[in-house]
Every structure is written in C-alpha cells, then in structure tokens.
Image 1 (cartoon, helix red, strand yellow):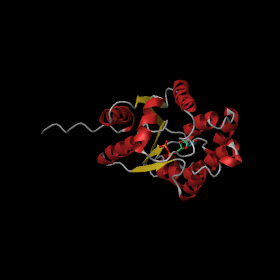
Image 2 (cartoon, rainbow, N blue to C red; image 1 turned 180 degrees about the vertical axis):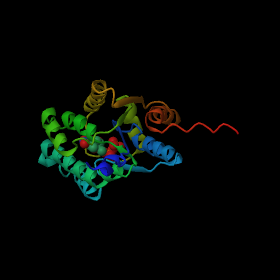
Image 3 (cartoon, rainbow, N blue to C red; image 1 turned 120 degrees about the horizontal axis):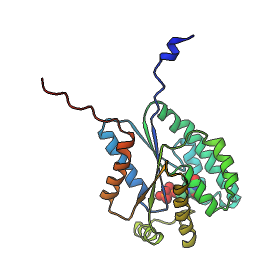
Image 4 (tube, rainbow, N blue to C red; image 1 turned 90 degrees about the vertical axis):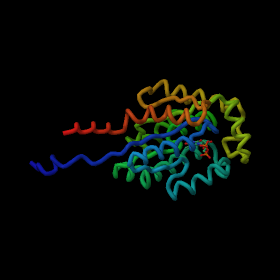
Length: 228
Ligand code: TYD
C-alpha cells in the first residue's frame, strides 16, 4: 500500500463564485468589491468573466456580442458560448482553483441556461447536454444573482449611454423573462444560489454579499492567545 500517497495532503481546491443576473445589475462593480475584500484578507483572487476569460474565449466573445454570429442561429450561438466556456475552464478556472485561488466570474453557465432558452429558444435538454460536455463537475460553489426590476436595469443602461450589444437590444418582455428564469433557477437549487436585491445602494449590496461569503468560505480567525 502506498502510504505516502494516502497521507499526502489533498490537492488544494480554491473557491468558485459566480455573479449572475440581468443587464445593469452591478455585477462587475460588486465582483471587484468582493475581490478587494478577499485580497485584504490575504487571499489570492482571480477575476474573470464570460463570455471570455481566456484568450481563445475572448475571440469568441467578440464574434457573439457584435452580433456577427447571430445569422448562424441560436444553436450555433449556444455552441459558441459552450466552446468559449470549455476554453475558459481549461485555461483559467481549473488551474486557478487547483492552485487554491478564489475564482470570481462575471457570468457563467447559468447565463446560458437562461439567455439561450429565452432569447435563442434552445431546448433546455440540448443545453444540458452541452453543459455536461463542457462544465462537468466545474460547477460554482456559490452563485450570486443580483436581482433588479427590468425597468430599473433599463434606466441604468440608459444612463451608461453605451450602444446596446446583441442581447441588450432585445425587447423588454424578454428581459422580464430573463429575470424570472434566474429566480426560478435559484428556487430550484437553493444550496448553490443566493438572490441579492440589487436595487439597494452599492455599499449595502457589497455588505450583503460579504455576509454570504465570509461565514461560508473564509477560515475562521484563530482566537487570540491568552496573555501569559
Ligand atoms: P456583457 O457585456 O458581459 O454584459 P453584462 O454586463 O450584461 O454581463 O454581455 C454579455 C451578454 O451575453 C449578456 O447580454 C448575456 C449574454 N450571455 C448569454 O447570452 N449566454 C451566456 O452563456 C453568457 C455567458 C452571456
């Protein structure tokens, strides 16, 4: 029996946290704030995003969000998201988790589950097949949904003033459906998801997110040594 291998410490496994929700909900801001808090605790953090997050996946991102891939149809778009995700996992997420880092991703597989069924009308079982092939066991430890009424997110996007991308230009009713699907996913898997009200001010949202992450993932601080 190989006792050395049996006694070897388990390979480190970092933590994988994803941010999801509709447009304009403040995902990138809150991801950056959580990353800063974790770093202040001395932890290694990798900030990433989808579509994208690796050089190959960023090329696919441009093809999708510019609308260039739209003419190939919703299945092709779904497969492009999946292909980008496979590369993102292989190049960025898996190595970072293996080194013990905290990986924070702005969107991940739940965006495909929601957007490609609502905008692309791709059947959920087809997406589940792609998901098994590309994601496998690389599911997030925690998925934070930043939840915002659609009218509020439209207003935030208008204030931002940037030209709408492939998905932002879709009609309001579809964005309502996006919000409902995210909430339905969260209800189905309450152990992985947390729904956070994104209409509160940024400091408050940051605090709520920290109150979810700290007790769940951060090693408790050692109690102070009693004075001799
Ligand atoms: P992005 O510019 O990252 O915007 P946001 O601030 O909303 O995250 O755009 C990503 C867009 O791509 C967004 O509209 C959601 C969509 N998307 C999908 O349709 N499927 C996916 O799997 C992912 C990751 C994103």
